[in-house]
Amino acid sequence: MNSLLLRPLPSATTSGSLVGRVSPASPRLPGAVAWPRDGRCRRGGVAAAGAWMEEAARRNPAFSESYRPAGLPRPNGTVLEAQGRVCTGPEQTRPLGEEQAMRVLDTILRSATGELKDEPVSSAQLGAFFAGMTIRANCFPEATQWSEGERRAMSLFWPRLVHVLPPEVKFIADPEGTIMGANGLTGPRYIGQGTAEMRLVGALREVLAGGHLGYEEIQCVLKDVLPFGSMGASSPSVSEALLAAFLIGQRMNRETDRELKGYCLAFDDELGPPPIADVNSLTHYGEPYDGNTRFFRSTLFVAAVRACYGEACLLHGVEWMPPKGGITEGQMLKFMGANTHLSPTQAKTLLEDKDTGFAYLNLQEACPPLYSIIGLREHIKKRPPLATSEKVQQFVRARGRESMVAGFYHVGYEDPLLMLMRRRTVHAGLVVKGEEGALSLTTKERSAHASKGIPVNHCSGFRTPSSANFSETDGISRESFRVAVNAQELGFKSTETPRTDKSVLKNLELGLSALGGDKGPAYDRIVLNAAMADHLLGCSGAQDINSALDRAREAIDSGNALRRLMNYIKISHKVS
Image (tube, rainbow, N blue to C red; front, side, top):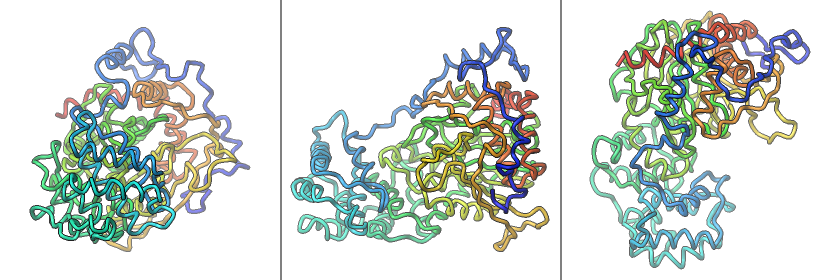
């Protein structure tokens, strides 16, 4: 382990003393909630829990995909599949073969002429697809530029498309008139309609050429165009195609630190200064907003555990988000009957409440402009820059110590996330490569045949030494660390991560069973993630990792963590 940890984690040669701490396998069927027939939790004493779960299952959808907002138009599947190949990074892009390129362009042509009534290609899809093609032609390496098949397909279809596509899409497809020859003359002359769109077009010319923008330029564009569309406060001020091209183009060009800073801080003042919670310690959790599609998501249960010993936790996100559309904390809390539409001020109240100590904020209330483009994000297929910056939000501040935790998956986003955390002037920051790019560290032993690159359970971050005085200026005294957490060195048995496969009910059964005291893989993951967050962030009482693990287990085994989660469901309605 890393020498920069507050205390070195046990090595393989010293971990024998922890073997007795390993949780035995549960004799129950996986996912079975241990509610006795008398309607009381085995631990925690919450009345009528069995009937409550049955009623919750009747009231709310059990699968994550059911939480997709009603009324959002669905994208065209043929073009969306192609976007997944061409709207990505310089090394990740996979050029289309001739047959697929022909099929995609034919679909676009038939949609533009009104033939596809049931599954039209949206303006956002047109913007994203042609932005991807343009950036590849202008600045990508040879291996990910247009294939010969794409060139032949475009030479056949573009002369027809140029007569039916709107001018903004023709601009995106050939902004300087250098790609489509004589049929690409719209682009150089296009300026957009209205002040906001004209500013966006100017920024987009730079993006489509593979260039980058400044911090102020990003902020101006975002303030101009958001909120957006039917989910926003007014009608769109710019074309869907232009905004989609801008968002996907920025991601394809790999955002600079100043661009990510612009996305991160653009709407900090949207609802005025954030409320300040009267708590000694607050951790902001930045889980990927699009959720988990395969494995157990533990952060909601971890928050309940850490709240038991004074580590207040603020979760934030949405009920449903593309591209994964997986299980989120919002879905789980809504399923259980909690109020998932709190204001930041109401969340502050829950953080301060001695019977809860954690809170969840929905982006719809915390930042309406960013929430307004959920539908558009589904149509651009790939994650925009906002997928990185939204994990590092600070919707509530704390009187005491503040920390941030965020998950990542792709190489290249670890350091930018830490940079954004430092911009937030928090005392400690932690980025985690958990399973599915989320925050959940696993107890599963890494295979000798695992793929190269950053391994799951990799953590890095910074914290202020206990002796340092914190100030909101550059040059803060911080210590950095990098460590790959080995659960076996901490005495955990290697176990497969429980699968949930988009089942909200399954995820809740696993988590509630674990908080009820059932030992097994879910229990171990909750303990590991709570204790490691405490230890790596430098929280009080967690300098010794063994003490941190014991404290997390005690919070569960005493029934305190489960009581807090059940209390949250009731109290979340009272604060509103």
